Image (cartoon, rainbow, N blue to C red; front, side, top):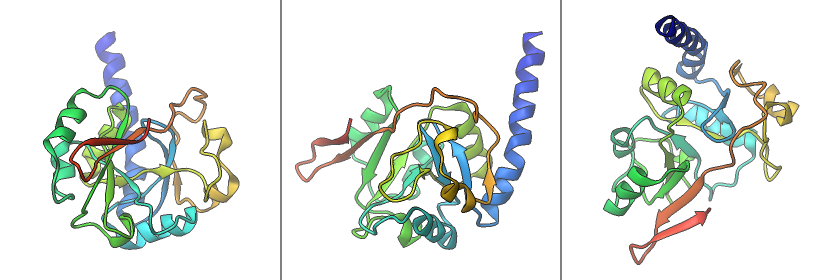
Length: 199
């Protein structure tokens, strides 16, 4: 019975992934539950899609977008250098952790800050990991709000202005009122010490 339930859950998740991945591959925007809060996502390697997210969210150019990756190996394909302290932190940090890296590579300029920095998080959430593994590329995961408006604590708080700008709304965890807080954000400072930008 346990085996059947586990298999059925995976089948349901795979069914859910098909339209999500199709939207991402076609340069569309998705609204999805991340490992923290509801986010607006797209193929992080698609410059047109990334530009659409910046326009929808009305983000200033000095802010990098947050990207999700399924592994450290995926992060390493898109950043110039990962400090050993960051690798250690990623291995032992228990809360969701977004790390800002100095220089992005093989990503659209709009995904990075105006200074070239990029922010990555490796989620431990099963749905996010399965989506990332199936898609095979990093996915943008910026908060589902516009400008400086408060981030939505659950699906019901997402504004119609956001939903109207989305190509596919993920039908998963929409009734969940117990989403997490935004992630911890850290970076390596000029003195090569860890700096926590948000705890």
